[in-house]
Each structure stands twice: as C-alpha cells, then as structure tokens.
Length: 112
Length: 111
Figure 1: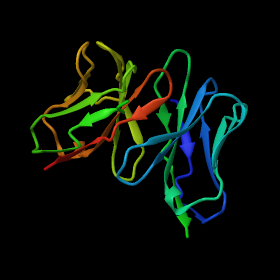
Figure 2: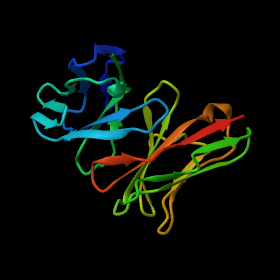
Figure 3: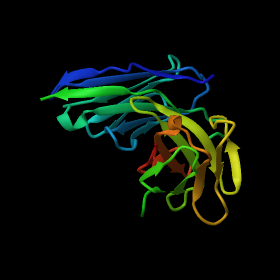
C-alpha cells in the first residue's frame, strides 16, 4: 500500500514568518513530487513540482526533496493571510504510471 | 487555453436516481483521473483513464460506479442508484505526463 503522510495541522504561523510543511512517502521508487494548494470549497491548485534531490525555488515557495529519507517539504517565506489553505502533498510512483497518491493535507493558518 | 472543465458544478439527486458527471480535459492531455473528496477529508483516487481505456480503477466501488473516456467527447463518471453516502465533491484532473491539473469539481448532494 503506497502511502503519503502529512501532519493534518492546523499549522498556525504569524504573517511574515516562514511556514514549513512536511510530507513523507512509503514508496522508495517514487519519481515525481507535487504540492497542491486547496482553499476551502475550491479545487486543488498545483503550486510546485520537484523531481530531483535538493531545493527548488519559485517566488516565495521552496520545495525540498530528500529521496534517501523519503521526505519532501514546502517552505513558504513571508507568509500572507492569503496563504491560509490546505496544502496537499502528492507523489507519483514512476515506472510508467501517471497517477498520483495524495496525502490528507496540512491546514495552514496565517495569522495577521 | 481552457483548463479542465467539469459540469455540472452542483448536482442534486434523490436516492435511487442516477448521477452523471462530465469532465473535459485540458487540450493536449490524454490522461484523466477522477477523485472523490468528503468534507474535511483528503482526495481519494477513484479511476485513471486514457482514451477508450480504463488504466486503473482500483479506487472505484465495485457496484453502482462506472467511468468512461470515449474517443470523442468528455469523460463520464456515472453513479447509479445514488445513496446519501455518495454525497461528496468529485474532482477530475488531467495530465499530459505527471503534472495533473484539476477541474472545479462537481458537488453532488443526495437527498
């Protein structure tokens, strides 16, 4: 059973702080990793993808991947109240498969 | 470039009726996925389709649920004889490779 684990939260951070969201996965052969943001009552929105070990930065977002530890994280710098949402980690196993396994998500609340 | 289009956005059905949910993938995307989400819960994979083929339906309930992605037209998720427990948000996603993009979802309410 391929699993993706996230702390459900809620994670509360003050405005302007760094929010750190974590995710672990069970399938060691997984190849592709994604972070989605989902506002309440809305659909998931792809915000980051990462495929190789290390960091990938896009604006205020940094994704970090450590395949040896089966760990992927998302850092949000200068957090804004508009970042308050549920963040979903998704993993693709590779080996010709395109479907994603999602974690249950971490609810982030940025306090003004 | 239109995104993933789902309709209807909201659907109300009485117990025992059929629900039919439609999904048109993004242009150039040949992979379609259906997910179900209950309130305050995560996304549950249901089925993965390519044109005219079901690739993986391991998340689909064995009875009453079916999905198709015909050569022409949208992908359809069909729920027969709906029950109250089928009330949920149903999301469709499409991809060209591994990056999947979601539609706005269909909120199904069974009364």
